[in-house]
Structures are given as structure tokens and as C-alpha cells.
Image (cartoon, rainbow, N blue to C red; front, side):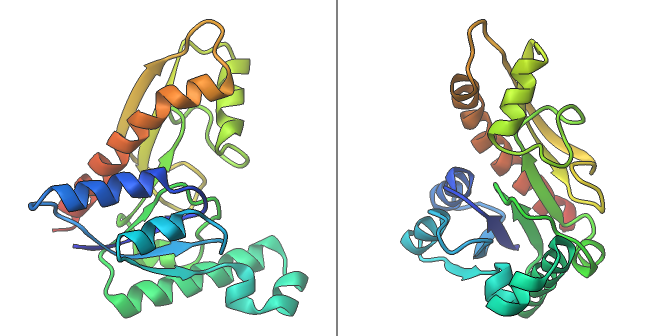
Length: 207
């Protein structure tokens, strides 16, 4: 099964997917392309090092500088989503994995790839999901709420924000004195496990 992995940052979860693919002859997925929302993401280097095609689908890359500068957030999201859909169509992509992808997919890609797009979220959904809940913002909110546990969730992507059916969850304790960084450091290895398990589950569901 050919998958596209969508990224925006450092790409440690992308690396977990790459490492699993390389170390398991029976890996049920093949990363055909990495799609980045920015040209500065370190994920691009990870893809190059692994010999995987990488393309940039930012508003500037898709719309041009002038059009992107004048566009609303919604217009940018739909333009980028449509460009990603075209890329996936042209490559015969079976499933799409959002691994630290910070933009919002919208429009035809959601319906055309219904139940074939998954996302990794750094909290135990349905808690601490929705608009603005990404990266360290999530961990700050968890600590501020006095939660006793946190973790990560892999879920299907639907028309909402972090609202799709849950596939995998991994839990860790929140310790006294935790900071955003110490909590993230405890969750990160669980993210790497969850993204691989979730991707395998996605691929198996497509068969």
C-alpha cells in the first residue's frame, strides 16, 4: 500500500515510519512521498536521506506569492488541500498519514480519501483537541488542567478538527513538577509507536 506522509516540522514521527519500513521486510506500507507544508521543515532532510520523494505544498508554492498574500486562511487551506489531492491522485496513493502536519485539510480530499486519512494528535482525545490544540499548546493545556495522565491519539480525519474515530491511544502519567518539555519527552516515544500502529491499521483497513 502506497502512503503519503504529510509533515510540517522536525519529522521524528516520519522517521519512526521510515525506520519501521526499512527494518521490517513484511511492512505493509511504502512511503511513496513526503508532503511538507513548509520548505524549511527538517522532515525534508529525513525524506531525502531515506531516498523518498518530497514535495512542498505551501500556499506560496501552490498559489504564488501575490495570490497567497491576498488569500484568506480558508482559501489557502482549500488551495493546498486540492494540490495535495492532485499529488496523491497522480501517484495512486492508497492512504494519507498526517505526522505533525499543522495545516487543515479540507474540501474534496476529505471525501475522496474518506476513512483513508489518519492524524497523530499529542493528547488523549476527545480531551484537548480542536482549533489551536497542537504541539506544546496541548501540553501546556494538559498541565494547566491538572490532568493525571496524557498521551497521544491516532484517529481518522473527517470534516471536523480532531473529531474522527480513534484508532490507537497511548497513555503516560503526568508527574509532579512536569514541564511542557518533560511531559513531551515522555509522550514522544509513545507517538512513534502509535504512528506506526495506526498506519498499519489504516493499511489493513483499506485491503
